[in-house]
Length: 233
Image (cartoon, rainbow, N blue to C red; front, side, top):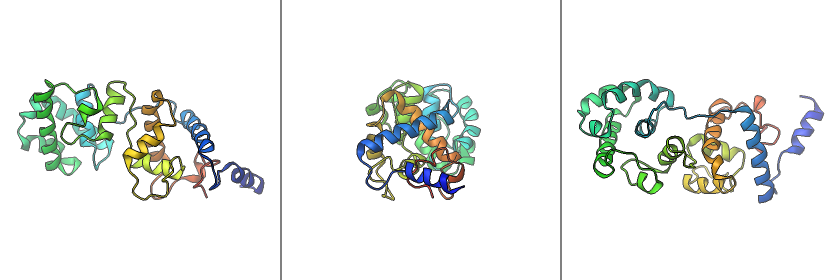
């Protein structure tokens, strides 16, 4: 890269004195770039109903969405309803989800979740954050995934990719924190965007984290946000 290009990039990047207003403006500029690079974001988990998405999201803990998608077709075919899953033989469920790891704990979580849905919500997945997070094993991240992708309710799931990318881009005030509070990050980032953007914003940050802004070795040379990213070399 020539000297002129280096100087242009350096001048475009924010300094440590960036104001809150300037940071918010940069966030929208960078998100506009991500919208161009990732025009049609979608949930990486395969599902055909809110129940299937809820189950798949619970299973995705400590594994990849791609791997979850390899076991859920058999799981959904064997147990199409919450009642059926609640009454399942644990060993049979373990056999299906064994490739995901932590299969015993995950089976216990699934059966408890299914029983709660069957007993408290007539087998239907609730549509509010309060009701979803009242279910065993369902936190805000899982609830936001279901709300945004199954019901079209604005939700902003905060996973490790979102935490990493928003930290490197310094979209949040606590970007130096090694273990930021996901709930605080959710509130801070969503305060800067319209609710209609929240679900796709999360998708794009996650996809960008997977494709470019990797945990160990980010691909800064080919990053579309290299010009403005405060963490770029």
